[in-house]
Amino acid sequence: MVNSGLLVNVVIVLFAACIHAMLQLGLGCVVLLYHHGKTQRKVHRNTHTLVSSFIAGVGVMSLLVLAAMAFVLSNTFDLHRAREFYLALAVAIFLVAILIWTVYYRRKNSTELWLPRSVAKFIGERARETKNPSEGFLLGVLSTFGELLFLLPVMLVASAALLNLPGGWELVALAGYVIISVLPLIFVRCFTHKIATIGEIQTFRNRHQRFIKAMSGAMFLIFSIFIIVFKLVETV
Image 1 (cartoon, rainbow, N blue to C red):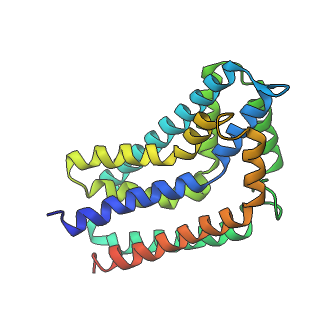
Image 2: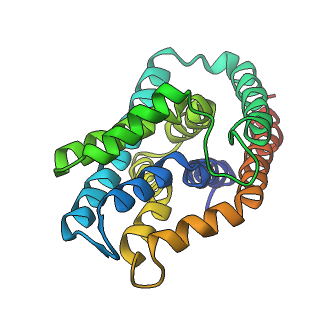
């Protein structure tokens, strides 16, 4: 029978991965890559390769950041102050939920994100100039860093949960986090021009921007409550 503590920690890692997947910067970069890779109504065959490299960059960077956080926590984490640690992160995640609802999107009914205009312009230029897989990979790394402001407390909780898992479960949960976090990007990569064009995907994002924003903020809020209920009580 699965231990309840083990189950809580696995749920935390996978829940954090779902939150990661809901953020929109990576998906926005994929849309830009496909947009700039079009020739009239067709997509360059090379563009699919660039998008695959971009997804690999996002996945590898997410893996490295999560593993680095776990390594730092394993050498600095004080089990006697675990209650304060989880409380601080729960509050931080609650504040991020408010930021998602208020400033994550710059304008109503638009997928234009919170990024400073200079950073957004730089990412747009990099997407336009990306011509080979290594550049696509680096763009994926850059987009992961761009979301860290919102993901930092979530990933810290996930890395702490990883440390509380048995050895075999650590690798499974870590792999699960990376796979789930890039699933929307993989979906777009696999089904663009099979189920929908990139223009239709962008139209869908624009039409449902309010719903996506509401769901993203709600997931942060629920995650914060989940930590308070299951981790603060556990560490009393």
